[in-house]
Image 1: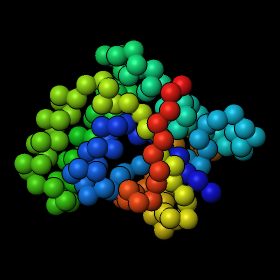
Image 2: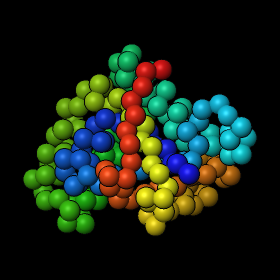
Image 3: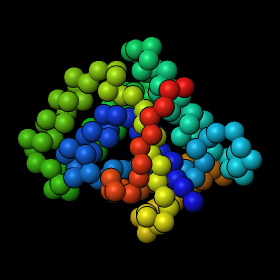
Length: 159
């Protein structure tokens, strides 16, 4: 079994540089490509790794300056830094630096990356997303709070 997650290049770099290669990911066993598996899951476009990748790729390529997805990613990364500060993972200076990086980030920094995560490497870390937080009540959605870089591959492709 594989899990898939779409993250931004900026998120990848921040996690690698400031959080010791620990990545917080929302993931699904369905990458979103057309197959019979799509009938077995109710993963809507907002939680489909492939749809997220496609949309993000288009918004970055077209230098969309009103992208809700890019703005949400920026806000999520800032909240992540604040959480790491509260946990003592980073100090005030590092939190400030991350905020400055996020403020100055360009659209190209939000290019999508597809994480391919072998379930066997993370089975003890995977948490089921509660029904009230899923994009569809029957979708298969999970999160991993501290996915180490050794536990996933990164794929970048043009659509």
